[in-house]
Length: 163
Image 1: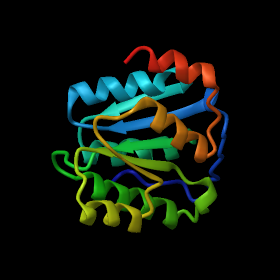
Image 2 (image 1 turned 120 degrees about the vertical axis):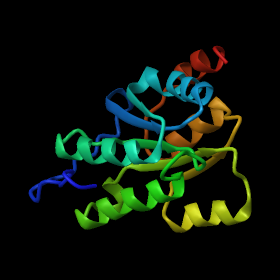
Image 3 (image 1 turned 60 degrees about the horizontal axis):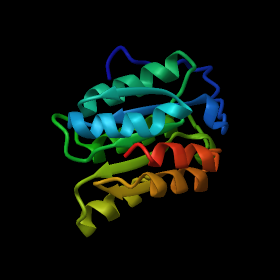
Image 4 (image 1 turned 180 degrees about the horizontal axis):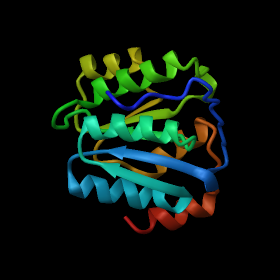
């Protein structure tokens, strides 16, 4: 993370409006990247990285530019840094900047890994959701609503029909 310092005067602004959502997808499988991007792009800007190190750097860069991610979707099995490590690093950055839990990025694990050990580790590291692939659009949208994002029912119906 060298060269990726976060300004000391950073003030994290949280916008719950889905129209202004900024999302980061960290996923090494191209097909899963496309599915997640199509699922989230109707609601705002979506950036995609194929490995964990790029995800951490993108997250910090967004903080530096005062355009933080509202949502981060992490695969667990990625080259380099795995999703669990990325989750720990992102939460560590937020903790170091004293970003309160209600204003930090919402992080959802989107993975094929379903064993109890990985699920519990992600929960322990404060992920906000855990989905096992294949992803179901309506379940992801329901969880986004639970996390405070505004998703209109017609948006869900329109996107569900595409899959």
